[in-house]
Image (cartoon, rainbow, N blue to C red):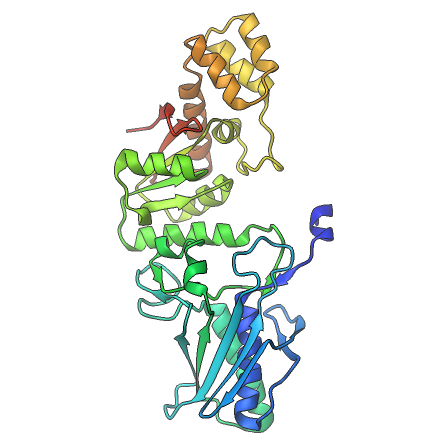
Length: 362
């Protein structure tokens, strides 16, 4: 574990909060009293407690709410109220899940839930059902219940996530595989990349675009008139996307990005974050030299303040450095794909979205 992670406070997933709220609400449903604090067992066996922020005992339904604490992770759902409303059902179907206010519904195939279901992922469903079963066993009570999860304001929060592109409408998803949010682990982002690929495959999408940022994303989308649902916000996680594509291929992908990040991919870096990989100006100077740059030009490149300045220098000298970087980035991507049947195109853009260089195999 890095020193940064040691100093940062961990938090809890929406799934863990939903499970705790459901457990407390079910206890009140059968016994009249809310559990507060309420303890649940996470998938890896850790026991954690949550303090209630909302209680409503209005038979035949009971609702409990918990404020999500994401620790020091920049999570869009940090501070959101996660509510669980529990009601007995006449059907002998165990725990039935429903999306309440602010929780999305699935409208496209390719996700781990069927179309039409509430966007409450499988592990959170297991956590909720397990928590209810624990109480039911203690009181020998009926465990056939409907659990409605709601997140006030969740529909607005969902606009800051990938849900619209994934075909999840009406709110956020209830997520989590461990129950724990590790600050800056970026697992949620990579999870979204994987789900975006899954949806594209399930909907028989032939061509998807991926980008390192919003400017390059808009440029790729405009170039091919791709629907928003065919775009993947790759961010810095080139490796996470390409490794998943290796075993879940899509016929064609266009990767667009800025000069700095795609230069790092061209060097072979798969994590493009500035804190985890560095642009090698000496390497860029060497690439310029192979294109015929003078010794003076390479010396200027070595002293440049940024990748953008390097490419401006190359452009002034009529050196097709952006095309070379695109070609090398494509080679790095193909190396990760290891022969997977995915055609790769690389487009290099400046900060204004102007195309500087390209490489493709068709």
